Image: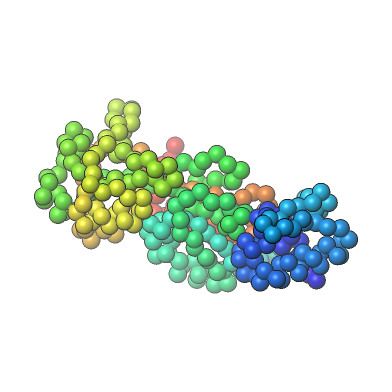
Amino acid sequence: MDRFEAMEIFTRVVEANSFTKVSESLDLPRAKVSRTIQALEEHVGVRLLNRSTRQVSVTEDGALFYERCVRILAEVTDAESSLSNKRENPAGTIRVDTSGTLARALLLPALDDFYRQYPEIDVRLGLADRNIDLIQDGVDCVIRMGTPEESSLVARRIGQARIVTCASPAYLEKHGEPTTLEELSEHRAVNYVSARTGRTFPFEYEVDGDIAKVSLKSVLAVNDGSVYIGAAALGHGIIQPSRFMVADLIAQGALKEILTGYTSPGTPLSVLYAHRRNLSSRLRAFIEWVTELARNNPDLRIPEQ
């Protein structure tokens, strides 16, 4: 039995309360996870987990052993990360969760550069715009737009998305181009509905030190960023997206920026990850890479204070 592997599997089972979730996140057969825990219990001479047909829970002895395992694994990770070869040649799998729109606009076009730098890292993207449990879902980090909610996670702000108002040339030809917020209020939008709250977002602008909110009528409201942008390109209404997500469509003439005399509040872009252990060299490499990617994007640069 590999005791370090057994401790890693044990701590993950404790955190996920599930053999199945751990087998999926580590790409191991469920039977191996179960056998490893059994062998670990035989080795230490006590029951570490209570098992039932519906759930797994840690015993009192298991809870004490878990705390020791967490510290030991953190020290091992730190020792490995301190080796120059590990810093220069990180390897392994990282699981990253983000939205499909953000992945297509920011990550996918640049992934070749990441793989050139880190050919031994396997990136697995989960595409969802929802709250997830990093530990239970087996995710290493999350990339999200908006102000992070209060949580135990580390939230590292890597960018400030510039927000623009735009519409298709076909829509503007048919309905005219608004030049003031009063004129805008008479137009039609493709409204965006938060998948998490069900709330429709108004358009926002900075006016005389305050935030002016404009709610537009619509015949279409969506909760997916790609559909939101695609509907606007097809002429269904005006939208207010992050500019980096529509930069290519603007350059191609499929969308046109309007109301350029107004400024909208920017939206934070953050990487979130657990801080209970030292970061692995592969996760650290990915976070530094995506931070630099955002820093070099003119529509994501954080304004200097």
